[in-house]
Length: 92
Image (tube, rainbow, N blue to C red; front, side, top):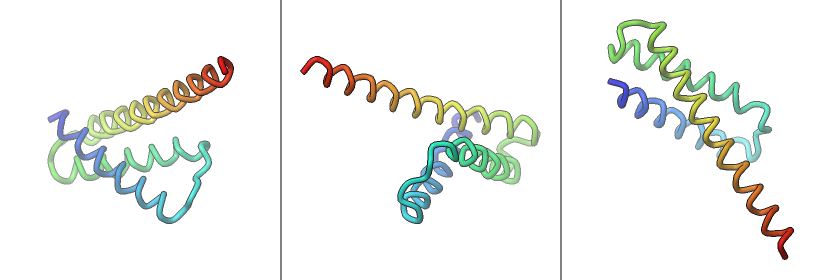
């Protein structure tokens, strides 16, 4: 069942991310954790009411962990790319 959580979280994240990009050009980075919590809540409700997980608390913890992990990985990739660009600029 854990793979199903990831799929639900991924779809919700994609939809909300697309809406954010279409409606607002640039959302400040300080609001991304709030967006992740909203994604976790929506994903939790979907998983709970579709009976993917009968325990609401467990569904929330799994969905919350998945969204925060994805947000952390995204931040890590952005940081790595910035450092790489900085190093390339320093070498030139």
